[in-house]
Length: 113
Length: 110
Image 1: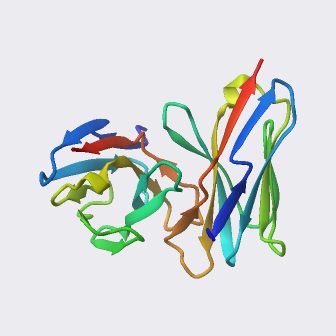
Image 2: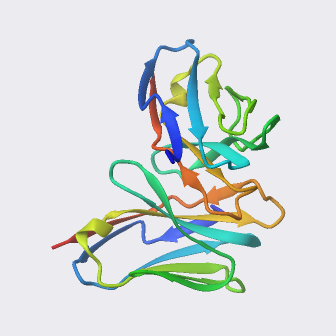
């Protein structure tokens, strides 16, 4: 099993550009989530999904969109990148909800100039 | 005040020392996770606890629900234990949300 994969590993964007961060898992997990990690702060939840076709907002959803058309994939879209979105982004998955072990992807380091 | 507080923020130990990292939280929870973030950035789940104590190799995690406190212990520490250790809680009634502490950076030297 590949586990949770994320692409790209690094990305530099200019303000206003859009892009999609990819996340995929091959463990048949229902629950998938996106977090951002900023210096001096804990990981913060952006969006999450409890199954295909179901998504919901976390604590910092503004500027991001998600969709879950399959169990395996959970892409995160930045609609119009801003310098405040410079961060490291982690995708995670687990069975059903967060009372189960969470498996994290390797992260995407995004810089917006 | 953050919902999840970890202490210490930074910790330096010599190889072989017994290490304790603390996590206090202010809300009712149904689960607590301990995670390890390697210097390269990858995050690995160490434990998920809802009560009592769990042990895996040299790592021991305990939780006291009444006192809203958990500890992660590392026995016979080794330089490869150097990492950031993160505590996260699942609040009661919020099955899909984890709240994370800011982490404890551990450096184990020879």
